[in-house]
Length: 477
Image 1 (cartoon, helix red, strand yellow):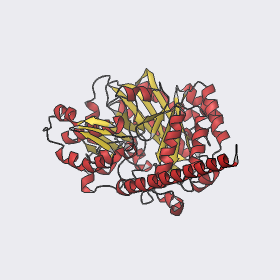
Image 2 (tube, rainbow, N blue to C red):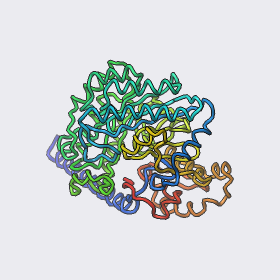
Image 3 (cartoon, rainbow, N blue to C red):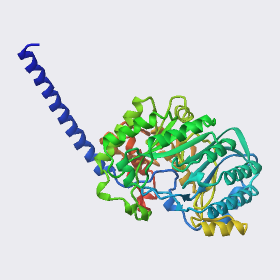
């Protein structure tokens, strides 16, 4: 190549770099503006009405009445909450406490068994399609206690052959004995908490966990026949940079998971005091969080994952992907799910149940929860009964956040609402349409690709409680 050709090539490269820099500056400016307008606090919409609307007017008697109305052999789901961990992760937003002695954990398992029997006695031989253990760290139970609780479930409920039995796991504390117990109990899906593999980030969130350690757990569980593997990752963590996020994505994919959850860290120190241990100055803010989330989503797509809603990803052919394509995807307190059961019974301190009539929540106090169960009383401390308007908006918001679109006429006719019943909401959606986050075609609302991260803002337009300023929530992005 001659000198002139070399100079021309260098000039073209410089122009290309300058164009790229200008595009990047424009991209940042545009999305900084969007985040300033739409990146505020909005609910996650794992329920509607959302948890801040739960009140103490719903208690044990109401829950008992709702249970008694369940049809004979109704298909239901179960959620069991174990509020214990061996150590506290500073980012955690769950109901949990640190316990390093076996006695309170064993006592908790015994109370779970009593609560299962108490609840089953108020139902008519329901069939179970999903069982989900959450926490905390469910695998902090001893193998014997875990199997005893699972045995009690099978004694009182008919678990369908196709049922999903899922357990959330902290790979740092899972023992070989507990792994074998999970397999013996029929567990067929596990969720491994990771968050981030960068050592600097791990130290800042008090969760040091190596890739080798996580890989060993995944391989051990697969050898035992547990094939369903979910991985939980997080963006928006302290000292987290784009390179670290993408490196974590690549390492996570190397574990060959079926599903990956990518949650935005919710910094709510007014609710979770241990989050005060996180240096707020080290948290990525605004457009940087956005860049991390979108870059991670693009990398997962490049690895062959399908985007599910706004914070889940799944392989083609996975039940979540199949449910999405069939319009059967749902969202509950554990995130996106293919579970079609209309009733979710919660067990354990702080657990939330969902029934056709409304929501109920157990006492978050382990002592109060245990006292109520031992007295033969449902340990419900609050809940929310659905009015017809709530049911309409719950269904509408569910389809929006799952399908990224909705035709309002479907809900107007199904619930007997007037044809202009959402005129105000459509007016309030117009600014989002002007910003390219949604497209509006009469009563048809479609969230755009740019609007997907802001789908909670779209849902919030239909949230009549949010208009009243009730409740504090996490950031939209």
